[in-house]
Picture (tube, rainbow, N blue to C red):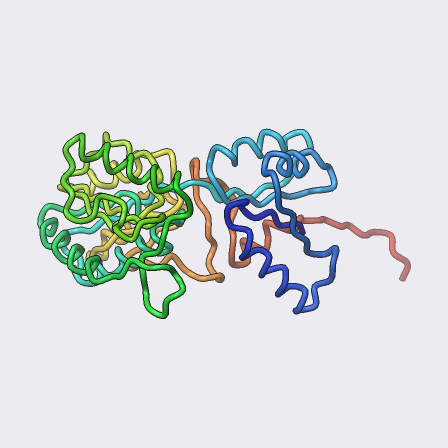
Length: 309
């Protein structure tokens, strides 16, 4: 196995290699390469000795890798982009919904593929959710990540800060209201204020773009059928969250939401023992659980006949 980490964040992969060596995995069994991603990608996709590629990243790069791997017919696992809806119904437990939303959204400052990107709140609890969310977010420190308590850390680089700022500016220009935040943090550097936007519409750029930052865009909705339709109105299908206490709605949501993972009344997607992956343009294949192991093996059928007694 050869791992190629992001050129922007290689150090955790170096640590993984160090732990592998200390655990007894020898050289040649597990290795790592770093450098120019285009050159490394071409080497991986074009080499017939490499029989499988597992990729986590953008949908655009995933498509490129799939095209370039077609000649050698590689098996592939694709964990690609997301545009996760987070739906809060009128009958939800308000405190639990806000708690789960904050945990899911601000994990790694929103820089995870499973981060809620479109937060749909039903009319009857809209204002209460916004107030409780603002209170909870205001109590979280913005600081560097090496802290004992939960903080909102920096974004990965300046282009990420610029992207978040541009999406917020576009929303405000189109009529969204900034409930809190809305600009780079006074700490400077790569810190961006946790931001809550209300009055967000499905036509805004951020409705179609993975935000990857600490921004809570709040969309109002009226009924169940409407919000399911709007939640599914995306090319992505990685994860969908919903809070409700209606058992029948649980079943309908689990069936009708177009996502590889549907999370009900929780902001946590799972652990290593569950199958992680998406549908539509969020990719194919699964990581984790026995399904993830099966991605790395092939079925062989053997028939034996005519054996001597």
